[in-house]
Image (cartoon, rainbow over all chains, first blue to last red; front, side):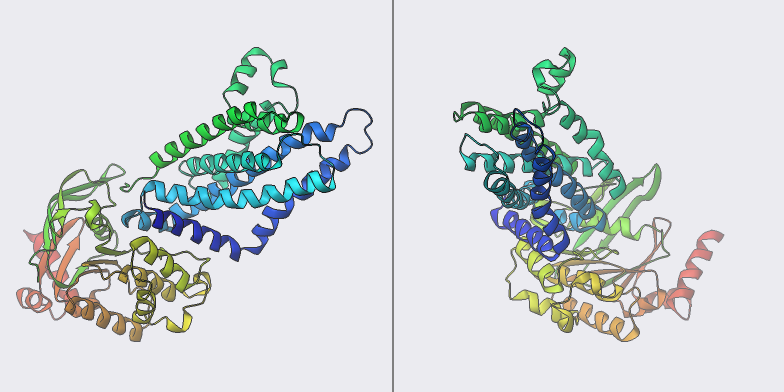
Length: 246
Length: 238
């Protein structure tokens, strides 16, 4: 690992993003708008606040989904344009490349989630019992997880169309089983086991825990699971980066 | 000057079940070496093997005394692929600054590399807005960073106007005079005259390895294209 190269990749990715105003605006504004939409949906529903129940899960999903899509497309582009081959023919280590991307998108996710959390808590009245900064930490872990997964699938896609199709294949099942639609312990046994094996479940658990309780022990253990998944998938992604290709 | 910068022995490459290179032997020394042959003859595969990004099925490639692709070589070889391997959404200067950082090159080298490929007027233009020839020159500029000992250039002059082509060949000779070994591929036979030494390639094998003059004398051809045809005919008759 070489910090100079890793940071070089991070700065370059952020520079590319800065030039793409539309993507940047959507990354920052969409989560806020969607949280507002969610709040609005439940406005006339009396009784227990559904917004407080569903909101945290959504906050966990944004960075995961968005970074998954962005990374799978950008790294696919990097593979097909020949820049990846050029970088790997240079002194770039695989972890410099992956770490550079993870750091860049982790930073973007931190800003994105700070905005989304700010709007949700400040304007929409989302109740958060736990510390707010920990919410951002969970978001960043989700983003890194999404980036890692996106990078991994980009190895199995030949075109950007194919890369985007991995989203319904790998992301939507996680959304269905993460406890948003039905509490995870009320799923059929087999699905509950599957749900226990999916990283997004832990990300959503961590967010939900933060809204209902000020004790952070469980949050940290959920966070550790998400981080472990991210590292494992990054390692798998590294295995798909080959200096020598056919 | 080193005698052999590249040594290839028994190099065999199979791609998609088809043999592309079959037990190839050759050496490349200093100066400007032209790798000429029709498209699809294995030029790119050979260059990729020299750079160390090609999966090989047998044989040995040594570059500057080390196995091709080994760690110590990664900042000593400048490699330009046919497709411009630069970021379309960054400017020429931003691309170069990024790759300079990866290579650990002095940031001051960025301007020198931009000047060398005659892109000074476009240094702050986003690469995606450049013409094809300008993009490939931006890609070439990246390969010049950190003054590599070996430059591997895959068809760097395709689609360029004659003046630019002449300027680039002058640049290749300047780099060679400064001590770098330069390997340039082309499928345009008239570029052969500009090389110190030629490797004529066809269907994965080296047909001839000679100077342009030596090649013409040996085959009695008026130009390299005639020499190439004479060699192919002679082989078919044998």
